[in-house]
Image (cartoon, rainbow, N blue to C red; front, side, top):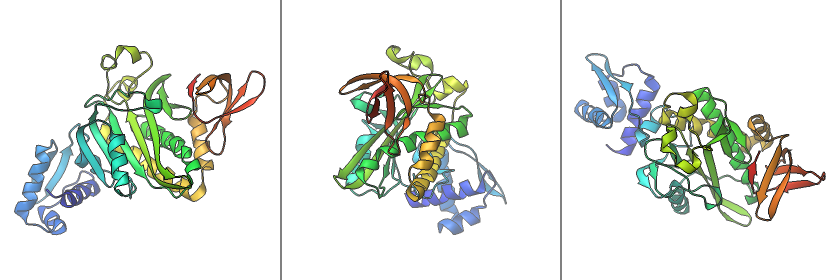
Length: 325
């Protein structure tokens, strides 16, 4: 099935919200015969969609597969831009690597790269990110913001807020954010965010936001060395989470906050970020490339830089560090 036809069909089912759509209506909107409609429906069934067909009523989607294919993400996606172009692959080395290549080739803003499995997922400071098949959400998003390069760290904090909001919306769980972009549940990490640039000194070409969400892992699936510091949404919730639904909500929250950011600047995002922040006012240790600083987290600047007051009362502005609370 051609991708534009598939998109139209899934948009139709999304708008129907579980109600029946007549075969004739589908035929008219897709511009194809009733026989072709039936073939399109069969293609969806082969992917794991359960569709009900009733004479004189038409078709409706009863259930969707527990997958994160392009079609599964598109069914119910409510954004205007983000995620409207999807590059899905079963297995990749890194979604971030593919997104960089697509951005370099001119991919439009909002292009989303998603995979079921990463063999070389990366976190901050070139750490590996454990990304097994069928358990998490491994994705990278291309943005092209009209902002100077020095402001792009703000998008990392914006992304953390959007993901925290999406988790809260989908699961009812309330996460914490540890500066700048680790999302925690009960003190254990469940989300990592990696923001990278393609830019000249005075101009941003693209921002690639890599997001790794531990969704349906069981504790035994984590490598032994990280079991005590990592968790998943399913472990915390006590039940499996629909990963495609979570992706849709992350895209929607991101789009809403991104639009707000471009219109009103960072201050509204800063206030939201501080509402989720676990470290503000607490004693922390910041391990930077230039050494370790201990003190109290006093907040963040309007650029998203962490303000740390050490035990001598001196103020330090932390641009990049590992933080422990």
